[in-house]
Image (cartoon, rainbow, N blue to C red; front, side, top):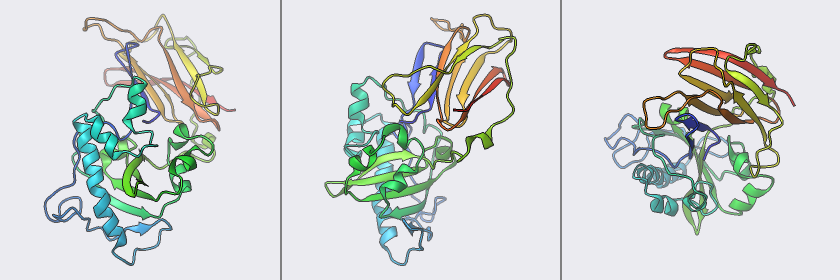
Amino acid sequence: MSRRRVLQGGAVTTVLTTAGCLGDTLTADDDAAGDDGSTDDGSSSDDDSTNAEGDDADSDEPAALEDELRPLIDDYLDAAAAEDTETIATLSHGSSPLHPGDWEEAGWEFQGDAYADVDGYEIERVAEDAAVEDVSDLEFVEFWFEDDGLAEAIGSEEIAIVEVASDDLEAEDLDVWVFVTEDEEWKVFFVGTEDETPADPTEAFEEPIEDEENDVVAKIDWEFDQDNLGEETEWARVHLTDSPGVDADTVRIESTIAGTEMEFYNDETGAASSTWAGATGTVELNPDGDQIVVTAIDGDDERVVHRQHYEP
């Protein structure tokens, strides 16, 4: 699961995107020397595979590991396309946050639209003998594992990291796959992306914009405390106005550094109409600094109506 939250249908349905667990089928081109650089036996023609230290591979070991891990990626994504959580469970590491057991019991609904438009990928790099520190450097990992939790979950098992090249997967922050052995078999442990959070978040800040007339934003509660989601996590709750002063079909709320995003929209065509007016949205904040951006969307016109910085 990723931290990105998308609110669909106004305040009616909240969907938590499950990283690596959602989507249509995604397999490499089976044709010889296809667009993904693979041969007809599924192995990659990419000669840039490296070990965890980044040295050029001097043996067939990285290629052999790629041949072993590629079918796991394919099987995992095929199972996700079929919403086959039993198969996903067999492919996932028992301590993985992607394992269906825990989040199904918690009531999360499996959805498969994240990969709907993805039709191919290349394996760009395979890192053998990766370390726990390499996994902890990925974005969103700290959301699931606090303190020594990641090291305890992996233990002394082997770790491999596979970087996947695909515009669609990169757009969904699903271009880095972590595999960990369990009972001497490789299992999917995590799917995410490299953490590109700037060391100094304020360097990414843009000029503040204040919704002085409260046309969209009524207030932001910076003291909001989200229970059971980590003591080190910061949150803010954005309250939208009850009396809109602008024409907007949709209002988007996002924290640009932590990467949390949600949308509220007007819908008067369904059985239950919805409106963004009076809605509240809770976003996660990067504890070292963040900015909340609220955008009013009317058709193809998007306008930032409020931009406010969070500086701890």
